[in-house]
Image (cartoon, rainbow, N blue to C red):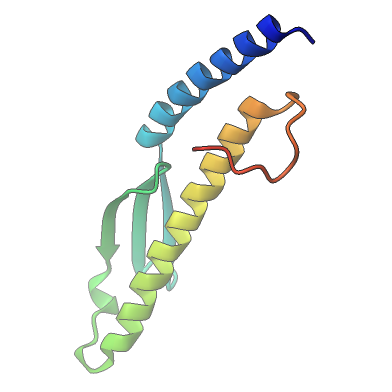
Length: 106
């Protein structure tokens, strides 16, 4: 492969990655905990957009359970967003001969 072709591919990849990052910043994912008692939404650039708590989940005598549900929902939605982002960005680099597990800047 000649150097000019590689440089063009790298420039195209960078352009496509920026475009994909903008798309992912708008795409939202959702995760619920406790059978829907707590629902968290986040964008695929790992920003929390909302947390909804079912009033039935609020028990003043068991605040720890609510904290656990909120934590589980937030942790789950961020994991889902990260997984979505990695999958989408990985599709851009597929077929470029890059070694697996490379942490590219996205």
